Image (cartoon, rainbow, N blue to C red):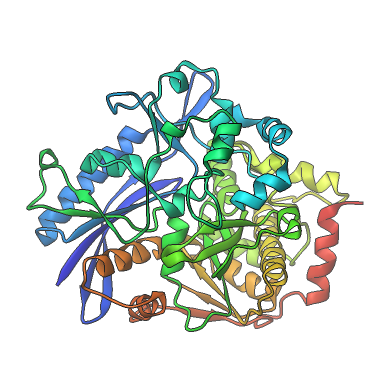
Length: 487
């Protein structure tokens, strides 16, 4: 039996999960979970990256106590955020959180230097105010950036602390806005034009390579290899999609929802840029052609708001009550800028409903139903547009991640897209992480299809059919789309 530790960091929690490969199947077991979230310091949002590292070390030591010497470690996390290093390799301050407001107005500044169509033709990246390229431009003129001699994205920074080796794994590097979408190399001319020093950009490495070995002072048994995996958690999650063909869409559903297709080549057309689709690198040279949808963040923030107000906010009870609310009573553009920063989401939803001439939700249940209907509506738009722009036919939608547990959302997704939804696995990123490690170590072999076949064995999957519960018709979903746009 081989055992691999998957370090999987999300925007609200981190976990260390041990994956054991036995008889061509993978069994996952969580050994440590620790909180994660923004820390406001001096008016800015940051990540507690040292706390995350402590949680990782605790988890690796717990894994060693449970299974003995590990056969590998792999790290995946969210994208775009980074740490700056000085000439000695020391961290220059806590990394900024992508929801920090310092990039407000920066995309427009960048596009005044490199027009948006030109930048998209090179990097293929959708415009999000928190893209790494915009963060680095926002940091220009600061003492930290002036002192920096290197930059590492969050999973690469943590891998550096474990091994002493500095690289940028390609799947996460592709979210920076500084990677050429076609060559999968740094677009050094883009960086130079924007005043970003080439010296900040570390050597690139593909998923499935040996990064190094865990430092002796960490205190694990033996010489434990650290493997590069799909270090963007979505890249790892897509590896774990239990698809049996190529005509599938996926939704990696958690704090964010990443909705898209797996392609062989990027789609760099002007139509794709106008639709705000992104071309991010996947494992084995694939392209994750997708759109970021705001995801369950809006629901999470609503629950936090209600808790702080002393209102009951038990998620299962709220979902059960939401299921009894008539469908599509109120819908909003869940990707609107009002829903990006932390805050009182129920009030923002009410304001957006009023702005578009709809009756605002009158209860917690109605607010939750509005969020879920609006998410399903966003999924519908993203799946259909991705298929049209890429010239692909889609016959099934795979949902992976924590959203798998939300049965109402899964059924609404089937209803809205008009496609069957296969839900599972819950720990998609961790499973994909382990599969890539095991192949790199020689325990597994073959293509992505072969890895998916191994990962699918023993999974508890659930299938949702469109209209199975008498939900809205396609015409009603289309009418709801028009209401989102307002009068």
